[in-house]
Length: 364
Image 1 (spheres, rainbow, N blue to C red):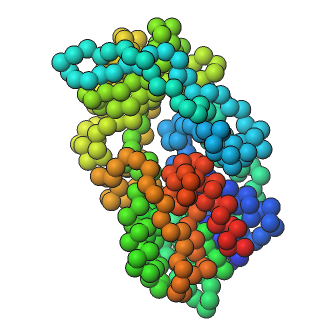
Image 2 (tube, one colour):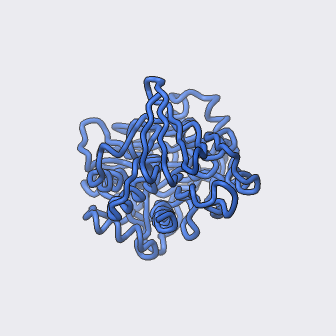
Image 3 (cartoon, rainbow, N blue to C red):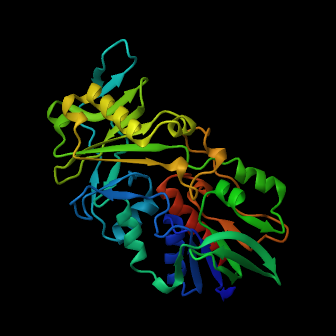
């Protein structure tokens, strides 16, 4: 068993964990970051079509931000000098009410304030932060099993890819993961206060019950037809559809599947993709059935995002729970900084920045 130490341990290399590391670096603090996955990003996942560059990526996780009222995130994006562009929303939307009636075109909904995207996908934000962090402080493929108070410090036990146990000792731990995942997957010794444990467990994880399908085309042909690429359907399998095209002229549509995780699991990935293509054909014409590339991401199947409690959860943002124990042995030793703990934007990218900022300030 290997033993290592740092003043601060960050568990999770999603946006909140990376931003916490960024803030601690500016403070010249001693920190290390532990991530179960093999790469940073968490629920941020940007993919490129075959043969495309890293600037031609599409998001299978969060896609948008709203700079007009998400000041902290907008400032970070500007600070990293990332290229942005507005979400395409010009034209009519398509509504599919039932199998018995054809889809209808009707005036679409424009986001107020305007939704914006990042060139290269939201992974550009992850990469922008990560490149300025000390690589030797970030440890991937480390699955946290237990947090235990030992001699006034917190001992964090992880299992690596090779099955090796490592104990990381810290004065303070920042939980950069969803509240539900923290209490359902990590063992705390001594136990967390029961009211806090229940509150964290009852907080749904944003994206955990979701699945996204994305189809890429040579060009956004629907735009020339006066359509925004937005769609709503009571038939499915896609319930909500949006334009995901790129500034270079590459077309793309993505949608959230409206069926629960258990039902998705009963179908093959091929069958789900075929059903999505057929639906896009009904809504946007025959050309929509012939994408040059397609992607499917079911977040309910990711053990580092979802638990069994998330399978039937409502697909909506939840109110933020208390972020840290107010009394007892864990007080002052741990704090939740994942996006779900944010007061203003729980579950959003801006919430990850907000939570990390508050967490680092309170634990200094």
